Length: 343
Image (tube, rainbow, N blue to C red):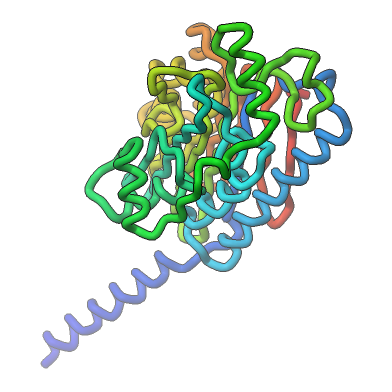
């Protein structure tokens, strides 16, 4: 009888310990976002343009943070945050996606769970309203990590992800950018810096167009998500770093969550997101030191331009970039902070 009572006490103690370990801590919940990096300067900005971008970035932050405040997961938070930016023509993702050389909008997205290291991504999709939701479906409803093109769209439809006619993604601004670059017959990264479009609210100089979010929930779990419309005038089914796990997107509770924006080919070759996590995991770097080492030294030496947002399990945020500007922001304690320029 005493032996049975002893084991019962151990069982109850283990149960209470487990509850204590999973008790939510709302003091640490944090969310960080980016909306692309590049030659984003005050000279290329009007007050109207700056106001529009700041408002949308703040809306995205508040949307994701509201999920975290209610006890939602970091995955739910980054997905909701990305939706706001995918639904806005201001950013090169979803509704604001740029055009390929063939006159189509081809989108990529990825999401990763820092708790389980599960991940999902889609690439070269043309009819999925919110590619980030399709990426999550791949992660949670298949045994795969990446799906592309028609196959990804069939899978998305099968699992109830919203599809739209490709015309949904048409915006005059993006189409005009394609016409301008076709005339020049060279590849352009997201935005043309020409003066002919300077009065348009969506044009602010050459920009590497991607949106991303990283989040820490009340249970200490990290998540990362990235979505993009790719490169204006791209050809041959080009895919950048955003949907490639370890390059443009990565999350691991043992290190950090990262979402990148920049010249994708360099970020793929440098495995940027995973490199940041590795410096933390194996060298004991802080998230700030690791992110700056990769973005401000390694990438610069390599010739790559862009930036990242990175977040560790203690709620520390790093947002380094080596370009003139990066749309970025974070929210802690309910107070959103949004920045655009280097200074």
